[in-house]
Amino acid sequence: MALDQVPTECEITLKLSSQKIFNSLSKQKSSLEDGGYDLVKRGTASLRIVINQLRQRKTHCRLHLLEQGDDDTDWQEAKAMVNQRDEDGTSGGTNGVMCPSQFNVAGVKLSSLTQASAYKAIRHIKKAKVKPRQATRSNLDEIADRIQESGNMRPVDSEIWRGIYSPHISKECRSFIWMAIHNGYMVGSHWLRGSMSAELQERAICDHPDCLMIDSMDHILFRCEAIGQKVVWDSLKEIWNDANLTPREINWGSVFASPLLQHEGGTKISTDEKNLWTILSSEAVHLIWKLRCERVIRNEKAEFSKEEVAARWKACISARLNLDRRTAALTSLQLFPK
Ligand SMILES: [Zn+2]
Image (tube, rainbow, N blue to C red; front, top):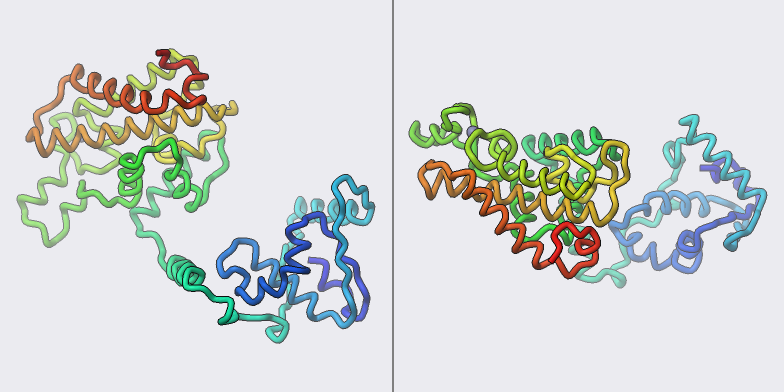
């Protein structure tokens, strides 16, 4: 922030390369302030600080919008200086800039307030106050860790939540993924609450003879020895390898945040490949959950055969891919030719 370094008596010219910022500081300034800076839009915090700084100045300030391709030496020098400070970690951004309150326009002009914008702002304020539950926090961290481990940028929570709204994840799968990340299903330690009878508390255990341990969503989807999850994941890996696509790990990151995968093992993933993985992995994880519920609840723990699981998986992806076959993304991969 260089504005606060120049004495307020000096006339200055602000050279801007962004039309959007130019507009925000000139013709849109009043409407932005009247609307409380759109209440919740990102980036408005810095804009408020810049406007506050400009108001403090005792002389005129000119705004100059640079045209594309302008080779303005002052601007180039300023940009190089900012880049250097960023590299040195000394830029500081707008932190520590003094913003006296008399130069701020706080709140929203009532005449500019609509019911929709007020509702949006209230929701935003409430949301900011709610912290994720411990189990949700732990699941989000697990997803972010696995995504980062596979050579991608570590996602923030909002990116993970936005990811599950990918158009390549069906409504049913999205609903399951949302609930699973929130630890919302009655599995494992949920049955160990003090209010549960001893008989109900027994449901906390995965009583498959090769497991006999406290159940959890992680156990059900990726580790349980009951016939189901392994057959589905192995089949998915086989399809993937046969199509010569970049092999990948099956884990919370690659399954619950598949739309965020950009790289795998140092290789850039194409959009078609990413979309296909999102479809297949979301359908697979949802099928594993459905099979587990059928086995435990409807079939009274009687196991499926490997053939039954394989047939269900095949039927599941055939139905889903038939829906998507029309899209260029899938046909171009030639994974499932007609
Ligand atoms: Zn198990």
